[in-house]
Structure formats: C-alpha cells, structure tokens
Length: 163
Image (cartoon, rainbow, N blue to C red; front, side, top):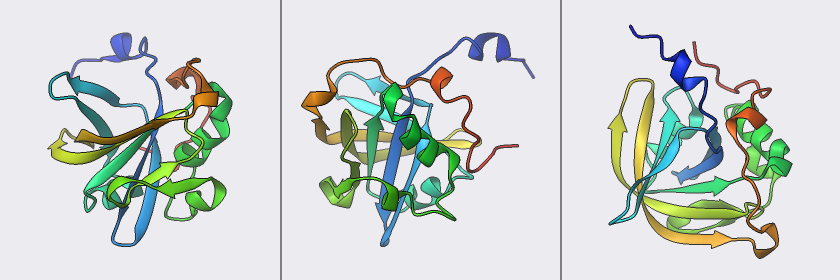
C-alpha cells in the first residue's frame, strides 16, 4: 500500500456540516471530504463515514443539507464533529429550520444548500452522496470572509473515531 501522508498532510480543505433527516430522525456531522464535482449540471459530493450516525440517517434520506462555517464557529464544528448523535441531540444546542424536502438547515451558517441525493458511491470506509442542489441560502451579515478549514479543527476529538 502507498503511504499517501506526504500528499494528504499538505491538504487543508474547507470543513462543512452535513445534516440529514429521515424517518423522524435528524443527524449531522462535520465533513472534510466534500467538493463540487460537476459544472453542468451542477453537482456536489459529500463523503460520509460509514461509522457515523449521520450516514445511517442519510442512507434513508432523499435530501442532505451542506453548511459552510467560519473560523468563529468553532463551537458548532466541535458539536458536530466531537459529539456523537448516538448520545447527544445536537440540534437542541443550535438554531435550525426545516428546508426543502424536510431537510435540516442550520440558521447561523453563512452559506448553505440542500441537495437531492442523486447517487451513492461506496468508496471504502466512506460513501459519497452526489447532490443535485435544490435550495440555497446565505446570511448577508456573514459576508465573504474566510471559511473554517481542517487546520482550524485538528483539536476536535471525533465523536466516532476511525481505527
């Protein structure tokens, strides 16, 4: 097996919170594997860990919401990255509203979108959810400042650690 650390250790991707709702359950997690993956039509992919509760809810969902965070929202990142939805109702600690298709939208996110799940791609310990954007929003007061990045959240202990 090739040791990819020499390459991956240099990456510093934007972090986002992905939320899912299905069967009367809500879930959300901090995600570092996410990217636009098509221009026409516009598509975005988020990769969810199979050990994460959000993955279990997302498997049954028709839509996911993807939220950008700013460095000032470290506590939101810590809630969604460091706490397990198996033990904590994360949504009791934040402001949220229902979005398109019953999705869960974090009200304090500077920018977000809701996407219909078009495809699921199994790629090992993560599954990619390819999303077709249906609804998008932003907070005008948030401005266009920097986004929360991987280097900003390295101190968060994962709620569901990976081996």
